[in-house]
Every structure is written in C-alpha cells, then in structure tokens.
Length: 209
Image (cartoon, rainbow, N blue to C red; front, top):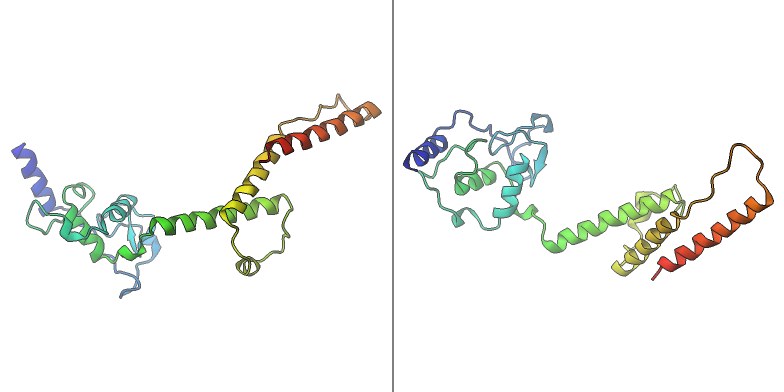
C-alpha cells in the first residue's frame, strides 16, 4: 500500500507528458484552433471546446460534477502542485480542478436543471418541426426567422402532437394487401383498399387521448 502511494506521488509530481497549455476564450487571450484536439487539462484527445476551453470528455464530465464546489472543497494529498496527465488525472481532484480553471473553463457555463429542461424542450420542438415538415404539415419555405417570431408550444401542446404522431405510426401498422403480379386492380380490390383506409382512421382515433 505504501509502495502504491509512493508510485502515485511520483506520477503526480513529475509526469513526463505534461498537458499543453490552452489559452482561455472570452475571458482573455485567443483560443487555440479546434484542430489541436488536445485536452488542456490532461493532454488526452479532445473533440472540441467544453465550457469555453478545449478538453476531453473525461475532464468535461469532471468539471461539470465539481466546478460548483470549487477548488477549496478538495485537498491535495501531495504538495499541491501535481502535474496532471492522462495516467494520473484521477489521483488529485484539487489540482485537476485548478487546472480546469487555469485553462479557462467557466463554471457559469454549466446549465442548471431548469436550463437543461428548456434546452431539451427546444431540441424536441426542432425535431417536431422537422417531422411535421416531412409529413408536409408545415410549409417547406419556412425560415428560422419565421420560427423565431412564433411562440414555443406549451408542454401540453407538445404532448398532444406527440400523441397524434404516435397514433399515426400505430395506424400504419395496418398493411394494405399485396397485389399478385401485375394484374389489373379489380373492383373488389378497391373495396378492400377503402375498408383498410377506414380501419386505419379508426385505429388512429383509438390511439388519441
């Protein structure tokens, strides 16, 4: 156990592959281009900017969980100057969080639960708009500016539309009979098609609240 602690201390104090510094955005300095793809905290592969600084998914999740608590909420088990890299980033929360702030990650960019719900609502509404457009229920030439002028649907209205879309999908489960070969459509076929159309409408109505 003592050997393990000594190994951890050596890793934290003198990591060979120290993470490259990334200049913060908005607060000062210029961002590195997205093509760098290197986490400014631990040096791992990064997909882009998170909370206004380039970071990997692991450091992004770590910052989201701990940024509100602040650096003072944690204690460094070593000298307080750990060199954070991919191999030791889990050993010292204090130094890792301090590094997050040093590269320009901003705690104010973390969404509250209310903000998350609002964002999810807008995403769902955009999906709904695309679905309605695909069903030709909205004009195709509708611009983002037009949508911005319209009020967002309420939760109850979104739920009603979802019921309608689900009911429509359920009614589609009633399949039309397949035609045999290329024979001409008979009068009986037309009657069957009409009956099935009625069945689909009935199924649709059954699904609605």
